Every structure is written in structure tokens, then in C-alpha cells.
Image (tube, rainbow, N blue to C red; front, side):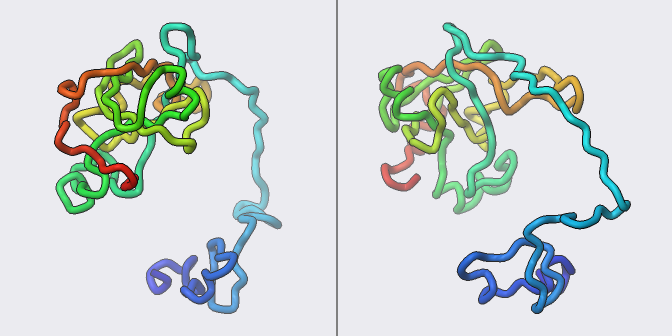
Amino acid sequence: MGRLVPEYAGVRYSRLEGHGLQTPVWDVNHAGTPFLFAETFPSGRAKFHPLEYRPTVEMPDEAYPLILTTGRVLEHWHGGSLTRHSKLDDLYPEAVVEIHPADAARLKLEEGQAVRASSRRGSVVLRARVTQKSTPGVVFIAFHFAEAAANLLTIDALDPQAKIPEYKACAVRVVAAREEELPRPEARLERGRW
């Protein structure tokens, strides 16, 4: 990689042990770059604009008490059109909703149970993964699974400044579902393979 990308030219496996390196690392004698543009900006100066905090458009309420965020898992790439048709799918074969143990207990949900995650726009059926990776009040669904498409739940409200859809935060509820409602009940992840 270092032969193709100059910013990685000084990266070596031996240099990564311990505390690692931050790019760019221009050559084997370069210490790395913990702070990009610490002294200058490429144009000589930068423009900073203070912004006021604005909460998400759709906040939790009684009907939809949790915040959904979406993202990736290590085993899959984007919509899964390649990785879902490879051996990588064996490592992470089905969609799950990650939920904090406190929320799972309050909602009477158990590890591996079929659940329905719903928003004001749609719902998907998938398995619950009870984990402390999630923050209380927040659930996570990976967007790689067409059979439990996370974006059926997300909101398309635009950020007023960046004009980017707010796909990363919306209000949802998670309730128990029947096993036969799962899109691929045979794809069950084994306990401990998360």
C-alpha cells in the first residue's frame, strides 16, 4: 500500500506495534501525524463556523421510545451485494438489532429472540442482540440486509445546513415478534459468534 499511496510510505508492521501510527507517514523515519494541519492549512488558513446544536428531527416519545442508528459491521460491505454472496455471510448471516441490556429487560426481550423494529415509516423483523455496546435508549441495525432493510425505518428529513438526510437517527420501538416472521429463520447466528 505504501508504494501506491505516499501517505502510507513509512508504515511497517513493526512500527504499528505498541501505540501505532497515524497517517500520513511519509517515510520510515517519519514519526507519523497525530494532528493533521497542527501548524498550517494547505491554503494557509482555515474557516471555522460555529454552529448551534440542533436535536434530531424525530425525538423518542411514548409510541417510539428508542433512537435508531444505522451503520456497518466488519463482515459486510455497503448493501451486501457482494459480501452477502460470499463466505463472509457465514460469519454474519442475518440482521440483528443491538439493544442495551437495560432496554431489553424493560421491554422483556431476550438474546436471539425475534423482534419487530418499527418507526413511523415502516418495520422490519430481525433478531435481538442484547449487548452493552449499545447506549441505553439507542438501538443499532446494520444496513447490509435487504430482508431487514434498516432504511425502511429511517427518516429523510434534511439537515438545514448540510442538506444531508438524517438517516442516522430516528425514533423506533422494538417489540417481540414470532419466529416464523423472520425473513431467514434458518440463518440464526450461534451464541458466542457475535
